[in-house]
Structure formats: structure tokens, C-alpha cells
Length: 454
Image (cartoon, rainbow, N blue to C red; front, side, top):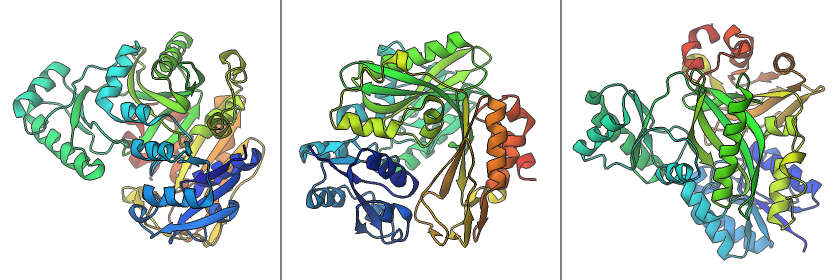
């Protein structure tokens, strides 16, 4: 069967998917909003279709329009990328009902893992360590909220049960703060996700954010492609990612990978996914955080150390190719280290305020062990309608220090004019002694902000 792929996304990840699809000789259909006509992904595809207005709500989030394009153009597959509709179970189900392969797990698995309360229960059933916490709470029931807080223990986090990206998350240190924090998070969650349910979770101070890349075959079996550290975050958004995660005991690392595989296998996961953990380095303990049922922004660092094309593997599995032998666990090996930084159109000094505008000059580095993923070219405009990430710069080396040094050299070769950007900030992170020695935790960037922006 000859397949046609609709790429239901934009920019960098759309370019990445189209590149993998072309290697597999797939015909590709891109979509674009009125704001994105000039972006590279539009020209890279075999055909491109205007999907709607500049706002995501009028274009990339319109499942009905995307499906109509898929039907009109004879698409047999839809790849959602990340963000937008990538973890929308209704969209996955609509694709299935239309006889179109959704490149990702089933709608049932997306629903399970999208509900953080149910995901925690699924993890516990699979034998994965889970932090003390509550189920969903009614924000208006102050007695239940306070009882849940006492049972969880302080300090704790108030988290939205739906959605992701840390939206609405709040740290609470005493019971006096709890009810107001729960109601504030619930209000934000309702506005962002249409679901105001919240839950409480014990806070691990100075925790690391470590994740396992998994790949499931949909038959109750799965493998892992090692680990990544994504601890360096600003406002709960990742800025620097590396593979493998440094400075973790091999025994702990192996248990974490086994737990991730057990969870993926238990829910008959299909395709690429990521199981995220909070890692308490002091106690050498890890706890389930969530599972992302899509390709991750940071997937290139895993590809760089394993040589596995994760996006191509997603597409091949969706086309029905048997990958179990090729991707058997004993065949998946790693070589060296890889580090990725996200370059944003933003001003770190002004609380990372987005900085839309024209890319009057946009010159990028080249070299051995360097990989650039971008959805822009010189002359394009970064608009205020979407995430302000301009590109990802990834470096590979035989050692962690070598990979960081190579990435520093690459960033020195980035030249962007017309907008504010965070390249100097990223360079400061990579040069910071704490980062160099592996003193990684999710509060690192906040603690070092003044030094990094000086």
C-alpha cells in the first residue's frame, strides 16, 4: 500500500517529520496557518494546504479542518508531532473512525495517561514508584483539601489533573496556604484545559527531572532507549536536555528503565513515548511523574547517542512494519553523550518575555557532531501566535564535557539579528561551574538566574 502522510503541525517538528517521511518515500501533506505561509515546512512537503487563521485555535487546533484536509488529499496517516493535538484522544479517535492511522498510541492510552490521577494509579499497578499524593480533589471542599494536604505531607505541589507543561502548578509549604492555592490552580486549569480538577503530590526538594525514552509495539511489549536529564527548566519549561542523564548509579538507572518499560508494556503502548520521573539524588530514589504519549521536543539527544531514527520508527510502526527484531532491547546501544539547548525568541532579563519579530539575519553553525533542528530561515518572522522556540542546537561527543564544549562552540557560531534571543543565556548555562559538575536540579535556573543574566 502506498501511504500519504498528513503532518498536523508546524515549524521545526513539521520539518523533522517531513524529513523522516521522505526517507521512507512517503508522500507528505503540510498544513499552515495564515501566519506561517513563508515557513520552510510549507515548501518541504509535496503539497501544502492553508488550514485557517493565525491563531492556533483557528488552525492547528481545528481537528475538523485537519481531518477534512486528510480526506480531500487521500492521507492514510496523520502525524501530530508534539503540542497542539498530539495528546488529544478525541483527535486520535476521529482519525481511527475515519480509517486514517494516527501516528501514536491509541485514544484509550492517551486518555489514561492524560488524566494524571489515573496515570498515577496505572503506574502503581505496574509496580512503578509513585510519590505520596491524593486523587482528584473538589476545590470547593476545603475540608477534603486540607485532609489531603495532611495525608500528603508538606511541602507539596498542587497540580492540574489534566494537561501538562506545569500550568497552574503551585508549591505549598503550610496548610494555611493550601485552600487558596488549590482554588487558584483549579481556575487556571479550567481556563487552560477545560478541566479544573486538581490533585496534591509530595514535593521533592532539589529534585532532578529524569525521563526514559520508550518504544512500544502495541502488543504488550516495549523497549527503552535509555535516559535523558531535563532538569534545567524555566517556568516548568525545559531549556537544556542531555542523554544519557549524568551522575546516576547504574543500578538505579536500570531500575528506572525497567519501570518505564513495565508501564509501557502494561498499557499496550504503541510507538514512541516518554516516562518522566522525579529523581531524588540524595536518596537515590525515583518516582513517577507522568507519561508523555508523543514524540518529545528533546528526542534528538536520544537519536544522537543511539543512532535510532525515532520519527521514522513511529511511521514504520504505523504502516504495520514489524520492528520487534530490529528494535529488540539487546540491539539498542548507546555511544557517547549528547546535549541539546532550546533557542527561544525571548528576553531572559525581562522574565523571558517573548520577542517576536523578523529574522533579518539567521546564520547557523555547521560541523561534526552538530545538529540543528529549526522551522525558520532567514527572512522569516517569528510571530506572537505560537511558542517562541526558534530552533534546537544539539551536540554529540564521546564524553559529557566534550559534548558541552562542542555545543558551546556551536552557539558561538549562531548569528541572529532582528529579535532578542536567549543564546547568551544558554552560553552562560553551559559555562556555569554547577552545570559542568552536574549539580542538576529543577530549581537550578531560578537559583542561578542573576548570574546567568549578568
